[in-house]
Image (cartoon, rainbow, N blue to C red; front, side, top):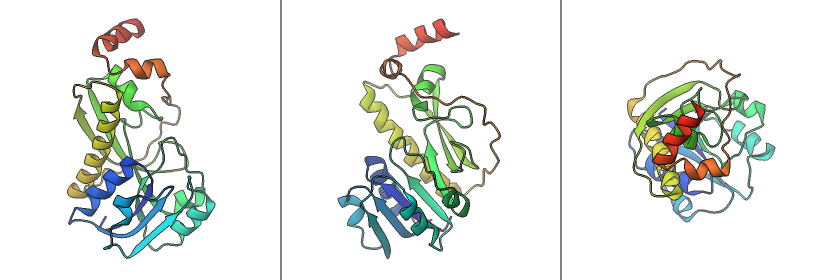
Length: 214
């Protein structure tokens, strides 16, 4: 992972990734693609030679073809919340490394962090290569985190960004290969109900939910 490209949507997580990765010596960023809205934090970086901006909300076929045309093989990607890449050729041609706030293959889906809060005593972030099957691909790293004392849901979202960026940083530092195939397509995907989402950070409620379910 000496030469890596960044594919970033316009959100706080992408800005966090950008700050972390451009501040490290062990990795060379030679390509950045930003889509959505312009970010002052990302766009003010002048050291990166190949910088591209697309005024589009999603990674469509136009952006996909552009990424495929690049010589770089490995890309760290920070898509929009809930965005699913559908271009099969892009997923086959390039290694798109994504950081997921749940332990794969057991916690798939968009709200796995909240389910983990209810079901486990720790949180896990998984770095893996995206494939055409959702949340299935070669796992590069798994990292566990202690659950802090969350005051509200905003704290959970902030910690989500922290978990992902720390796992990204440790993947670069360790440079270990945790490659193995996921063959668990029949496992459930987690999409949480808004009420459970609100209750998941409440430790007393969490104990009650465990008692009711299990």
